[in-house]
Image (cartoon, rainbow over all chains, first blue to last red; front, side):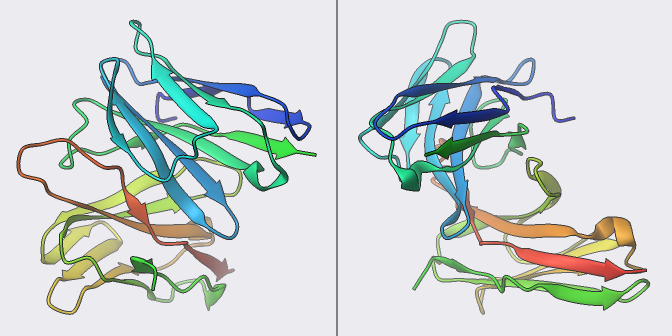
Length: 114
Length: 115
């Protein structure tokens, strides 16, 4: 158990809908990362937050947004969902959000868009 | 060409064999190299972490980085059925002043250890 929690575990929704994925980092970690894992693209970095502020952006679509709250939990919002958004979404956390640190991954949220 | 290339496998070996997993990369800025293990329907967990070139050993696992060839390897000795999983290489660049841009992952190699 990494100490990172994610809810829900599974999510089934329809095209065009909007969903929110939630992540709680390990105790003491200030930085949260979001990743998407699909069969064809593998695991891809979406976005990073550090202590409430956006720090880095990867391959995140404009339909997707995220935020980190004062209690350090983070939410990833996915809107206007398409079939291709079906994937595993992972959250990871680290203490200071630097390259030298280990990122600890949560168990993921499996999203299925029908 | 993708930044990180990794053979997806599956790689099937008998129990007790030495396993060799590899990744190649194209971005010479990568300085930090990691191997993650991912069991089915679970999140990735860190196995090995290496900075720059060289070898690192931890129990049955050895990680090697050759920056001149842009090639990294993970060796597993005395492989066990419990080692059956997907192994993902990951890497990141150093920007000196701190900050991170997330990790760049290979697609993962599916490893099967036959009892």
